[in-house]
Length: 211
View (cartoon, rainbow, N blue to C red):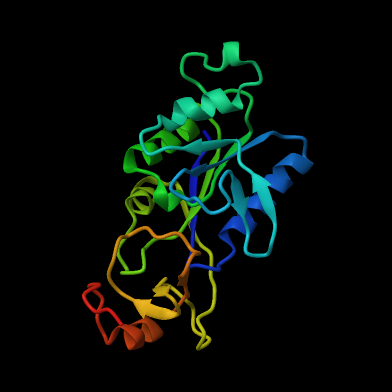
């Protein structure tokens, strides 16, 4: 039986780079992979964008209401007429999902079905928590049901392991606002350890304080 993997880390921990490397490893062995991401991630439009400058087009983009298992079956078929056989994904050796935190819990359940019922490994990459230290719904569900959890590590400016992703607007930290704001157009993120996060937030973890 194939497994659902969740590889998570703070911003700049190499998630997209790791995904692209995994895709390369499969393809080097003559196996077909399918790359996907949620439509909420508008950075790069229909591309996966690594901070190292490597990009690659995705095969399928999931809208919030999409049936992920059906979308993967359609995208994975070489012949549209045989896209689905008893609802099973065909002709794909691995499904790689970037920015998986933006999936809905129902869509994460579909990823588990792909792994267990269709016997296709699924590697999902994302971050656990938003800039307020609150879990994304997709990440929370992945932490609940994934067969394998792996933390990808990165370093805070102080040298400790970074675990949080505070948001900056025009260069200043903010600790309230909508959960999703894509990096760019005045919005950036800095990976911080717990100590540096609490220093910047004035000791608050509830998102109530804004600078």
